[in-house]
Amino acid sequence: MNRFGSFLRGGAGVLSRRKAEGRRRDGEGGFTLVEMLVVITIIGIVMSLVGPRVLGYLSESKVKAAKIQIQSFAGALDLYFLDNGSYPSANEGLAALVQRPGSAPAWNGPYLKTGSIPQDPWGHPYIYKVPGDHAPYEIDSQGAGGGADPQSMIRSASR
Image: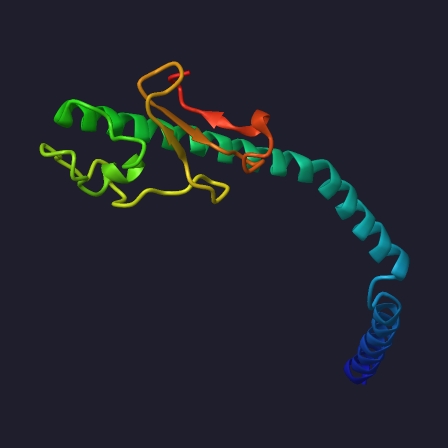
């Protein structure tokens, strides 16, 4: 009978513990509105601190991409000059780097790997000027301002 009595006592203990755990779980079933608002506020504060930096890196990367593309054009124009003895005219433009112009009998292109003239990172065409003000040619990007803001223009290294 000792075994049977201890079984009943142990079983009753297990049942009472389960009831107590169930009661505790009911009280901790979710987050309160205050807890949710605190978490949302913390996320907002972190985003307000990190967001401007991320956007700054994005604009810096577009400027760097435009400068690298202008350098690529400069290298291609120099190869064009070596083959043809002159740079493409203003009318032929940068398209002469990917498509043979009529005035280039020794054209050995395409001089750009892409096979087309890409636009700048802001979606504007690059500006090719020959002769340039300070060099045989100049390549410019209108930058983020789209030409409205002269300060945002990105100019070739020849200036």
